[in-house]
Length: 310
Image (cartoon, rainbow, N blue to C red; front, side, top):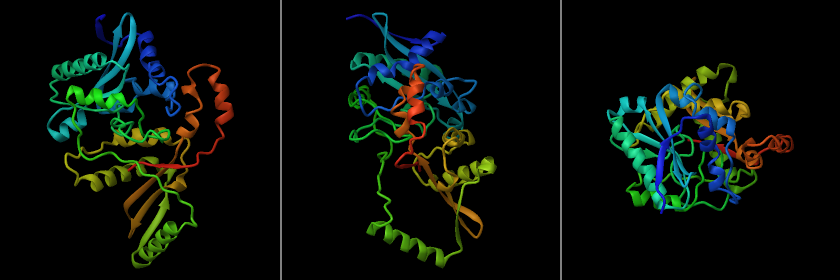
């Protein structure tokens, strides 16, 4: 068996191979949603990626017989380290051929990187923002993932567990609901909401895109107040909220980004974002010039569902 080598990604050619490697893993997978290459390139660029406002990262690629066989990113969110008093090596962009030896070599590289940066654990997966494609998909391969959710081969779970990774916290669950206004469940929910409005001075408003910085301030406060009770909660930073909100500004409907106010003070929010994966699944990541012909065909496609990220 030939040697597996894990090396830093440094040249422009290597970065291109890193970004396009998932096409090898998911070739023929009808559920995979190829990411837009231009957005992925921005994400891993220290000069443009929002993650780098609060952290740093290094890209690695596994090689065997002169060919790439796996990728991983090692990163530290310095704001989280400061809040927790302990450093975590975030691992992300993990992709790997179906060979545990390759996965082990990638995880060993992450372990060495963590030690060199005085971090005491490996944590992930994140790409590298904590809200993007977090975790490993265990169940739910009956449909393509919606926006912000990840998708991976079934063998990834076994690779992580064989190396010693353990589940952290509760399961990350995705729910689906039919919002046909004529169904009994939705009718009941609407009646209940109306009763609550009558009892309290509650106002529900849409998002104000003209004051997006002010809205981000509100979201940051609500996220940190609402989730602070969770065990090992890592406070959100402004950069992490920006990474979740700003990329979606081009296609969100402000009437679906809802804020609930009691006596004029925001007490909750509902981020209803069109599931753009219904469009992206057809575009091949705009990897080739001819893929833009697909964009012309699907650009006006209206998604059938909303993604609600809590």
